[in-house]
Image: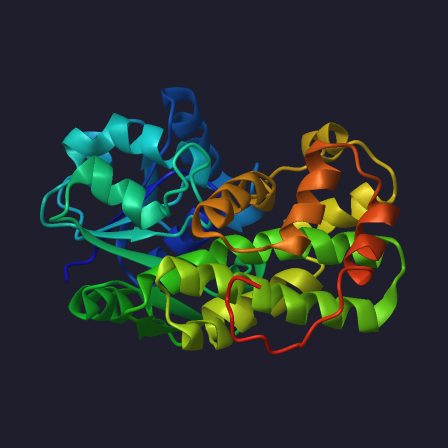
Length: 338
């Protein structure tokens, strides 16, 4: 693969990967939605809104023109929020080279259709698209600091995953490949929902036992949904499953955990979100996940309680006890619908 990479979107995670790859000597172009944003980023030589004080390498620049951003790009990284993925693809689809490899780094499920991001990409760009997704315990701050990090590149075409693996791996950023696209995407999206729940529990001061229980039962819940959707169970014990779930549910860097903690303090959701610079994808994913679960006849008690808190006014102090008073059952029920 040649060394020209386009990044669609100026999110913190997308910018981080752009900076990391530019530092490896690749030419990187970030696509910004407006000329004003592009000019500001180029002038500041940093993304002040999402990555303050992290300077752009010389071989990283931004543009507001899709054709300029993606011309000759061997790899196009899709780094926009999940709920705007389809809209952004519609804006740029005419500029995406047919030969480019596509890497979605957005973790979410489209609310209106309950489609995964790779499904949205395929619908908008066609089945011939060379699409893969990236997921795993990958906090942007630790990646741009050069701390050792592992990730997963998943694609139904393992050759596509392998090419991207070889392109983005560095001495501190190790990529593994996986052909379970469904499992990796479901795991990456749903871990944010569970992090909201853990944040609520932590905010109430329920302790380590409660946190561990929620993480473990959350993994079982995610796995049930994933397997019902066609995923491989083993995927959920890997980096995109257990790895990302543990990181997102326990780290101070987790936006979704933060939202849960603040809700437990009694702050209104709108107030919490207005104070944040990034997006807590778990909020919208909660809606989409429960819609998908209903379609697949999968029970998701933790996600349901999170939904009730987020959208129906249930007090956080009532949500976690509600989980503890559910019907007693066998822990390892092999029926994925239970």
